Amino acid sequence: MKGLRRPLGLAAAVACVALLLPSCASAGPGSAPSSPRLGAVTPVPPDGEVTATGTVLDAGGDVQLCLDAVAESYPPQCSGIPLEGWTWEGVDGAESSGETTWGAYAVQGTYDGETFTVTQPPTMLALYDPVRPEDPTGGKPGSGDDATLTAIQDELPERLGASYLGSAPQDGWLWVDVVWDDGSWQAAADAEYGTDIVVIRSALAEIAG
Image (cartoon, rainbow, N blue to C red; front, top):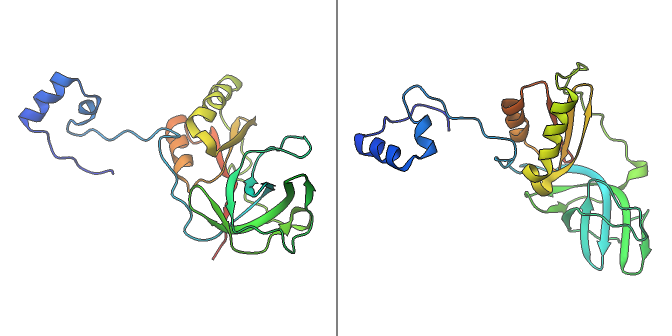
């Protein structure tokens, strides 16, 4: 939390020097706390309902919403987020093979940071007409060179973990797709790399109230 800090007492200052604590280096008067690195903060789950598009894969009752690439096998395979409240009853566009059923849909529901809970009937993706999001770059090229963007890209899977869906460099920007971001990761990326390098895109979209 930003703001003024109490000055350290003599005993605390001596203890800091003796133990060589990194935090002591920023505890002096006039210093400001460093910004969190990308991946070191956790986005706050959305308050209301969200929408998402992807492949619903039901493997023997284990239902997932896959938001990124799906392996071209038969039946297909993918790794997604747990999907609760799902039923195939009355849902068109599904295929089945053995104990696996799948289909591409737009879904609506709530997300608690780990699980997506369906609250409305899904729409077949072939019939879904999404609202086109605004271009956060305003059409302007970014300032990242190939080496910089590649170096950042290589770090992302480890730093963002299971929330990382993929990334691609384009026009000086690194476009990064994640399951959900409330703005925390975008702010961290801007602070760490600059405001004209990385764009964080959330696969889950809040429903305007």
